[in-house]
Image 1 (cartoon, rainbow, N blue to C red):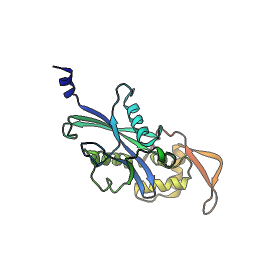
Image 2: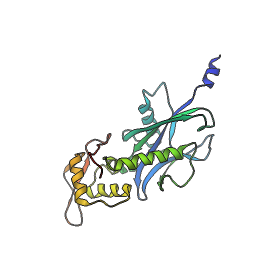
Image 3: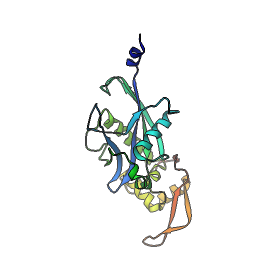
Image 4: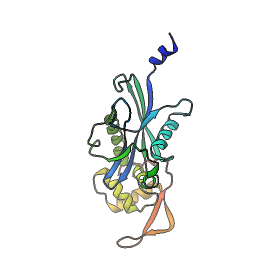
Length: 231
């Protein structure tokens, strides 16, 4: 058997990213328009081949693809799942390691020029974006949304979608938007204090309707804090 014959039996291996941020329309996901076959012209989740001579591990591959598509190097990143079969890619047996990335509003605004030319933000509609996606990416997006929505109930996840500096009212608004329901203000603030994932920015206040509001930031921008009970 020749090297060519052996290569023909190797599965295609990629990393694909469900990259989320907040827009005026709410939670949005970054999509790219495919320039090459298969699915030429269709939209898809950003992804790329694993570079065995460059990527030290799977997360390194995901962060490289993230930077290539968005210009962002260090947001919150979480592995969602590994999927693979003979039918998901017409080119052959394929494996995809899927990651979720959360970009703050500041990340998006400051690096707009670094965004790939074929990339665009699409608002989330129910469990997708209201249009068909290449490969099995509609299913992957649905799984990513399910993971995010479940974690909102018991983690600091929404804080990673806000600008670096934010008030508790702005944080509560994002929680409510992702949960689809209102939260009691006093109970919410008590839970945030108990979770201890925020730090006040000394001397920085923001105008509010009644009195100036304290401005906060995340203690750790790369990891989530898990609550001891759901909101």
